[in-house]
Length: 346
Image (cartoon, rainbow, N blue to C red; front, side, top):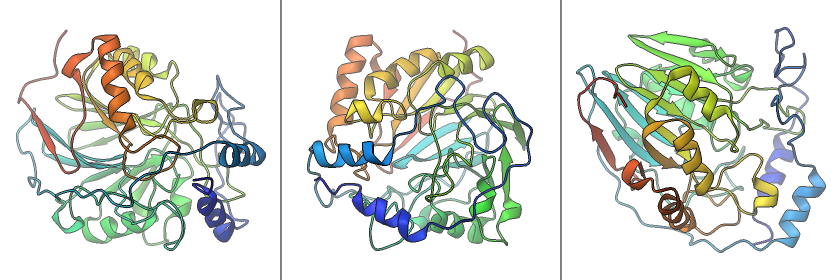
């Protein structure tokens, strides 16, 4: 599987252009006037030669071409204050239904995570819900601009059908068509957006951004805190760092967190930007989260671990840290409903 990401490299070369987002912001602790960076990890990017070293010296576990799933139906909307349900579509796509509002994270219904339709990592599992069966979406959260998280064909379909508000990091609207840009609200870290009784705050994460040869870190990445009758945290895509503890300090605690558990091997290459399941459990504890859902796994082969390894490693990590059922996973299309109560008290 030495060619695991070579199609992705070719894809980037095919679509690279000189145009990049231009950010009209003053310099800050994570923006140098031209590019964004992680304050505590300013040099976490990998060189092209290091990428090639990974691809030609490491062996990836072979994935099946297809894993059969049964696509599910989902309720249209929660209508009562305090209602919370979460449906795992797959990869980092999650339908969160909170206080009567339908929220979708990093939606991707495309067959490939790629700038083009004919090469690039191909999904082995269908989305857990058919696009036509997804209820009307009010808010879409975009954690960063990588192709498996900001899938423009899918976003175009939702914007045409539902006209949702899209919340994303600074620079993100650059990639949208002219008619859709008005729906995109860009946020800096710690900036918030209120919507019908909920509050969405964009928070730091340890990651990076890139969609072509020329736009590396020109667009801001991050996580989201959602405040309603319950508090929900969406980690996006991230390496392990102290931003989880800082989020808990800022928001006291979370009722539910969506935490990535996949795309983590080999560790010497992936550790900076992707957590393994043990680090995901550590993040769950740092966030003081009552419940956490493991996401970002077993859909697209982006890295070397096997298709089932995230679930196996998560089970071991939960035993090590004595987490129990507080950290759970769902089948694709499966929904978990939580009781109609106010945000929990420890």
